[in-house]
Image 1 (cartoon, rainbow, N blue to C red):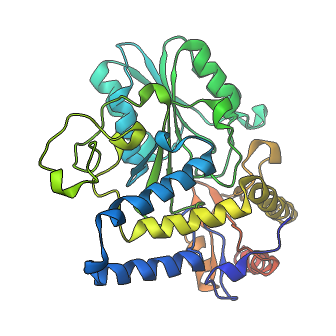
Image 2: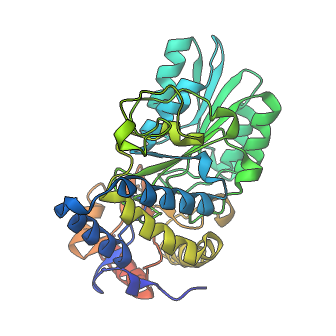
Length: 380
């Protein structure tokens, strides 16, 4: 288990930030990268054609290494909603087909599929939250919902409100069995929850960088499986066409795209401000390692669960949630003003539905947990 990595962040000692599921803090190394990026744009005579491509390709390679795929399978997008629009454009749904989602799934991973169902005559099937009698096993309910009529299973790795986990290995196998596409939003899990890409075999996988990956806002990654690499991009831009590195010949319009998933890159993907920040964050995440982070955060959430139960709160069983965040339920539900009250004590958590969502990261210390539970006891 790691010691707290607080020294790598600019978080004051008196602040207990337990809300990485909303947005993660920047690393000091990412702060420095941002400052250099701003200075570069202030001196644009230093920007060359290499500036547009080399940092982006370095970052693409880092993310590919992090996910466990080839760089040609990675595209840069501004948000998960953009990724879902690409996936929806490239997966067929016929009248009567179903698109499977989770109940209360994050909106960016619901609206595109609701529209796709309406446009094609398909049906969106929302899998309800399991009853306590089933011990909260959402995976079994999802497996039962994926049938031979299912065209798409559009799912997360864990639920954004409380960390309830899905067995993506089993779900991926079920999708292949019935011929359904698997589209994943792993924004609330990638990096802190192990994912075996070769075992799961998604068609598309998207992640926003600004939460658990400690990166910038408006910066996201898209994995595209090999059999979709010749699909239709969401937009046409100069950057994703073959030969765009040669600025002198951009007027020689071409029909062929850059190799692999680069055809799906958003316009202005170079993003001089955000790419260096994302690159610095990826370098640190790779240094820590997903398995190590998962074990470390699992120890923290295990302690949170034990202390919460001592206070009379309900915590989900460890084997049915992600290791990195936990939804704590009060018998009478979580007061809506609880986050504001805790913020006055410089303790930061989220309330989602009727649960207090506690989301530590590598900066979390024992003192943070003490501040959280002390403030919670005073309020309750």
